[in-house]
Amino acid sequence: RKEVEQDPGPFNVPEGATVAFNCTYSNSASQSFFWYRQDCRKEPKLLMSVYSSGNEDGRFTAQLNRASQYISLLIRDSKLSDSATYLCVVSRTGFQKLVFGTGTRLLVSP
Amino acid sequence: NAGVMQNPRHLVRRRGQEARLRCSPMKGHSHVYWYRQLPEEGLKFMVYLQKENIIDESGMPKERFSAEFPKEGPSILRIQQVVRGDSAAYFCASSPEQKGEKLFFGSGTQLSVL
Image (cartoon, rainbow over all chains, first blue to last red; front, top):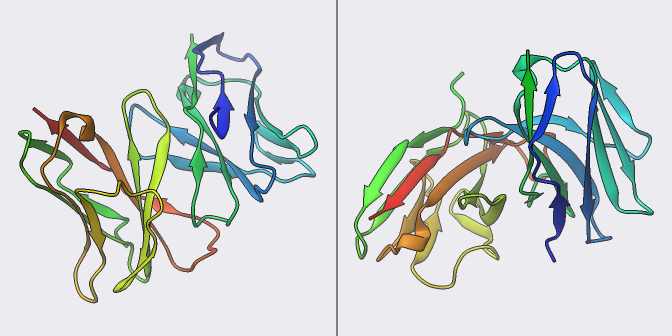
């Protein structure tokens, strides 16, 4: 079993739609949680950290459920530029040693 | 202020040759991390280095792979006697401190083994 599991997708949505991704992790010792974005095999870029209280950054909302060991990302009012692969990332040691999921691919169409 | 610089961007090697991948961290960063992304897979941690020290190499294959981060110059990931299964994107990241707020990734080196 992979330490971080994600639905690979792709999720095909029209512009303006709301889309949600979930991710589960198996290591209960995980302390830090993130969503990264990766475009066409380029370098991953930090989208946002995820906190137990939930956090929002513009159109993006992230939630963490420690009891169920899952993390979610909600994207509202999807833009064409949101098309990318979204990587769920966990760590036991902050940024020192990140464990990446294989990613969920999002395609936003006009 | 240049970001994390990796070179070459693309590297083609024949089976049995050596591959050297270079990473210059961001200015002021003393922590370097190497990750590998195989086709259709997530990034996998390989090694974490500070200047002249290997801190965690738990993700490095036991043979043929080595990494260094000398006092002067870039960090080097070295793969000896490459095999087709080494074909992957190798990403380097740097941070200013061990538990920094953010890792900055380089653009990666795509290694293709013929």
